[in-house]
Image (cartoon, rainbow, N blue to C red):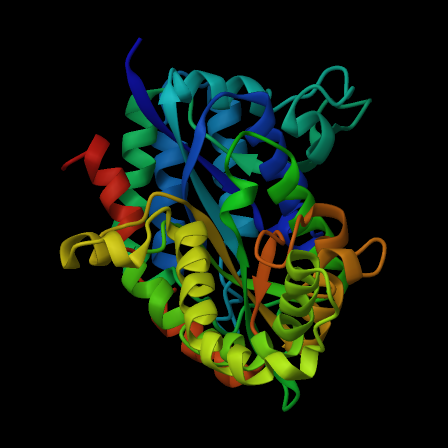
Length: 391
């Protein structure tokens, strides 16, 4: 069975209702597919017009009622505000694997739910309500949009590819995103420990992040390169040098006391720890980069440093009032053992490095970090699509 590329479009309504994490978790754990791409999109009226026309006139293997229902939904729920031009937000996910299209279609479920028992994504997050007397549909929210055939996948992805450069990346001025002087943007990275195997972790973390009451305005699934990681975590080097003497003298004193059989005063070892600080910082820095990228900088060629890493992350940009502090509060202390119960790092972290997620500590650092990972670039995302559909 050949490998395929499938997509899932998370609609604006479930994003507004903070159901994104739950939806992503369903696809991650109920299929054996790999999430290889994710982008936030603010559809333009041109994109909406072409997309809805495809659904109405070119969608294969679907009846006329379904085609019109989907086309009308996209026109109504994806179109920018006619007065202000402010866009809605949707998220496109790309999944790769054997029989990916059918697997995504099966997990998504039918447009018209019959049992509403939670077996499919639409059973849980979608609605299709008919008037009991006339049979006419009075309310329709499919939660996600998917395609049932390779031809439909290619057609729809082809439409989105035409507009991605203008409508994807960080979506500014979305209809449901507040504006004002206290509004900030901050970056969250769901670290590689969330992607080692299919699990609910990433989706559950996104659900917990919604407690902050902020809006997602940017999404990017990517593999951080060593060069990016060295820039991203560069400032950590100095802090590692500074903290080593604080705990190093006590640990060194304990070790020497055990070794020699007499008490060694920690204060005597302060000069030694000052000398060892840079060595400690370099080793720990290499450990951090290796954890994030799968490669140690000291063993990489320049070409390897600039190529995609072996480990993956999901970047999320949140926007809202006092966003930096709100996100860091939900994450909890950097050390999971010291984080409050119910915080993300307490629930999902292992140690200071393997602690589930990174969050920017200031607006300035958020901007710096977003530049380093090139959050607005669509190149990795479009490269995946062109791999399967070159034209």
